Amino acid sequence: MRNLYQMKNIERLSAGNDAHRRLIDSYTFIAAAEGRGELSIDGVRMLVDSGTVLFCNPGRMIEYRAAPGSGLLLDLISFRMFASPGQEAQPAGQAAYDERRSPWLPDGKLCPESPYRIGMLVKELRAIRSSDAGAEPFRQEMLLYELLHLLASGRRPDSETDIRPSRKGIELAIDYMHKHYREEISRDLLAQMTGFHPRFFSMLFKRETGYSFSDYLARIRIDRAKEQLLLTGGSLNDIARNVGYADGFYLSRKFKQVVGVSPTGYVREPKKIVVYDLVGHLLALGIKPLGASYNQGLRSLALLREELAGTPDVGYTSVEPMLQLKPELIIATDWLDRGMIEQLHKIAPTLVFHSGDPFERFKSLADILNRRREAEAFIARYEEKGERARAELNGLIGPDETAAVYEIWADCLWVMCESYGRGVYNLYKTLGFTPPAKVKRDVLDIGRPKKITLEELPDYAADHMFISVYPANGGAESAGKVMESAIWKQLPAVRRNRVYAIELDMIHSVDVLSLEKQLEIQTQLLKSALR
Image (cartoon, rainbow, N blue to C red; front, side, top):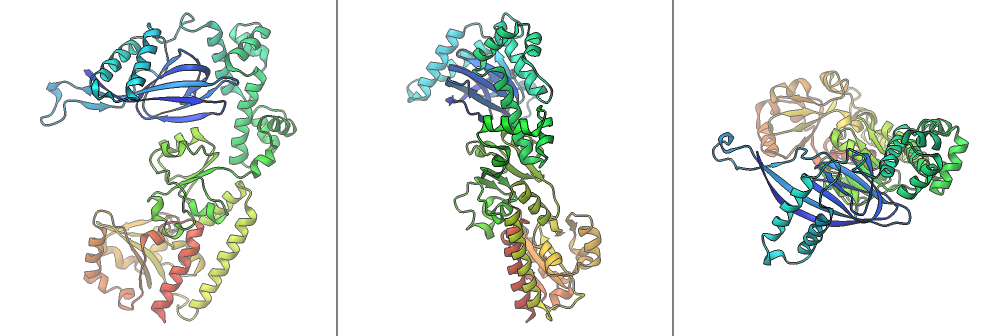
């Protein structure tokens, strides 16, 4: 198999003492141009300084920071790779080369044979990219091929001759601290493990990282404590033991030294939050997110457009758009792809909520964010509106009348449940409707929507039918055919004018703020039809 390579980009990153994160979406070489610091690839940490060269495959998350008192400049050279399986295996009419995404070289440090020449190639590539490369259309590709040849043929740093013994020992100590921070870790233990005298170990650690051993370990433990303070709601004593401290008093003192505020103060501080799906939960607590996303696109939250004005949509399939926002907390649902959730955990403490009662999720979130008072005020307001709606509908709806929500797709119909929005929660929990027997048994009790055919619809039909249309792939055309069918026209709700059309953008979301606004829409639809 032969490979072709195409230059994608070369850029320079600078870092201070704060951590920066970046999603690597192409094959990338990373060359440290100046300074020193620490860089991790998917959690594997390495010390870097001027002249260090690393390789990173696509789909990796890198985190980098400079050592205290030092800046750090990194050049990232990204490229695409195209592989040919051979002409004999190539179907007729198919492109001869396909883009490759699988791992090429192992992630991590390289030991090239010609570091000086590599530095010159990187400088020349940067110069070409920053100017008009039209005068030398092939020069960039020639430099790239030479650079790849030098780097790909370089050795991996798997022996003490490849890395200074001091650097290798300190990296072993750092790796051990990150994996065993819950346990008792002493300077003497790490010195013995790395083969240095304790005082010499302390000097080397400070030289290589910019931190004393004890300060570096404290940073690891306090970072883990931050996550547990936000995600677990555990006691200070429990969290202290979980991160390697004797008790909550000592954790509190250390926390204030490192962070500048007490653990309680940290929890109460407003956080920079990015939220996926549960946007209205945050807004109902009086918190505007730093960035947000929704599984149908943020624009589809029609009822929340005013509250979300100016909030960036971070998308639903990549963490890249939200990395520059540098969130301190991420709130998501299990509707997200598992790989996406794993990437979010690498960026900031991430709360993942599962399907269930929207108000129970809302109260749990309020407790975590110390917004119980705001949650109680919102719930009281919602319940008051529910009482008012029931009073307005009193006498218009019989005590045994049923209701359900349906959605028409291109090739089927769906009977909806509470955890998938569409105002279902309001109908049963707030307005007091009864579900049809088969809807209760096959949908609500199971907690999942049910896909049905038009022929099955009479078995699931209700006295009051709320209908939305999923427009993709011909849903609107299908809705027209459904409503022209004899089966549809014979439904009691259709014959009695008890069918209510609802726009998907208005009714889709299941967050509590949307439910409050949907309640008003549903009440008005019922009143208009029944009076």
